[in-house]
Length: 356
Ligand code: 13P
Ligand code: SF4
Image 1 (cartoon, rainbow, N blue to C red):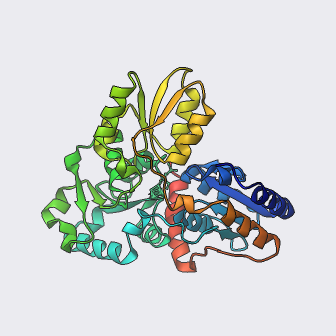
Image 2: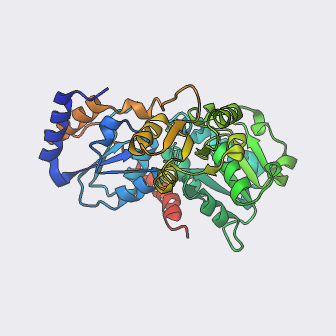
Image 3: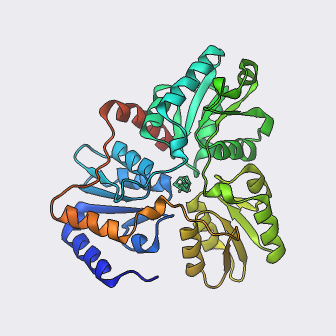
């Protein structure tokens, strides 16, 4: 549905009043009505860099989810306020790894005698606490666009440990990257279940594994299945199946191409007119892509539609409220990571930004 013209006008007015003071970031999964007001759009890696590159903006309004706003706060100066227009915009995947669970896991690894040879690699989709854990233990953050480089760094000769990675919290990104990009066997990976004693693993299994994958996943991308791929191939002959690496391994293995949201956008820009594409990622982005490329057939990979419900919480009314409050000098919904967490989380984020 088209946006309420009154709200659009109010957002415009408040944004104009704030001028250079405000910088609005929009993740690719955001609603059209929000993307319209974003100064930049991007995947989580690009947005982290963009936030860090705007020292003159007093207010960074992050249209995305909680962990992204935390990362932006960590990468920006004390004087800059990072704002999340709806505090309930979390991420179910990030919530699957808590600081207590991860500390317990490290104890299990220590007990098994493997902590010394293990380096944590944590997906951007994790809380600041998990990023701080990662920084404290010499690890790095990665996103879906640099997971390969992060794992290459972790396993490199002369690298931090060269032996084992604890990958948090998305098992699929971890497995897909290890198998597709580093040539590991799925058997080189074990799954650590935080709800079972010792993660449900023996010391023997921990010693033999190259990748210890945390048992987390994205519920949005988890809905795509092998059936969805087979079904779309039967319906649209010659279709190119392009999926996000948060999808299950069997889906990724059956796809033609795999990549982050930024990758997906570029692949479609480069695609010839008349080509057909089935995209396995969040629906707001797929719909926008279909609209932007009327000369190509672009469909959602699954028959049932799925938005990321927490990304969708940021809507035009929340954005208007945020911008009008700021224009009135009232800072609302500020996301602020405490000093110590910030220090260690920043080490891990800076390691990511410095990846070759
Ligand atoms: P990217 O933007 O890094 O591709 O990540 C997708 C995602 O799920 C963000 O929550
Ligand atoms: Fe989290 Fe998945 Fe939503 Fe991304 S799409 S914010 S990983 S729940």
